[in-house]
Length: 224
Ligand code: VGL
Ligand code: ZN
Image (cartoon, rainbow, N blue to C red; front, side):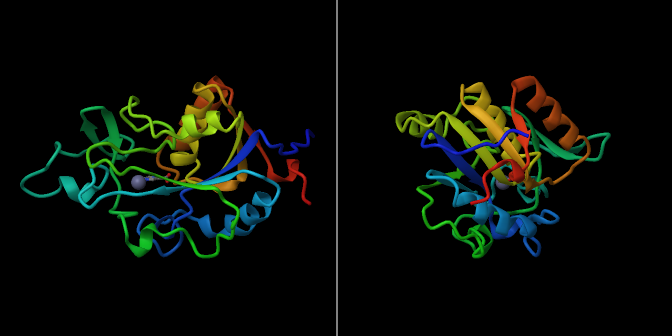
């Protein structure tokens, strides 16, 4: 097994480890809390660690509640044959979610058990009312960059390791975007958990294979 030893050209990205995505939260992901200790441990192996925070205004386009009632703001939600609730947004298909990670609320806070004091950047995303952003690099309209690629390039970081939530959404879209932007992109699979909507895990795994995103285990990183 290849041992991956982090260098100063590598960064660990910890995606959306927020209270709303953990058990008890508004969009709880099963087992999300169980990956916190492993993320804290692996983070100590990296000189560069970056955190992201999903950070939505009230009435965000990705909230099902925004499109309910007599005056849907940006169209009417529909159910797919597979049982997903989606909106045909101006930029394409947008899955709809319970209200989550609303700016300044307790649910939007990073989980307090996350312990990475040397993390050097917290990147917020999804703050445009009319555009969601699963990816930490590029919003869901596929044309609005977050600025993260520029930050990393300017600092000489070329290889990225991904952990956090959710495997099939924000981790997945971030790792794919990173590969498309020319970064080496590696997902530490056991330090993620999936929302697991119909077809979402299969689809992201297929996209990883096409884009050259690698999937590894945390046991492939040096433990001390
Ligand atoms: C996420 C759904 C909605 C994620 C964010 O962090 O994966 N999923 N917003
Ligand atoms: Zn969100």
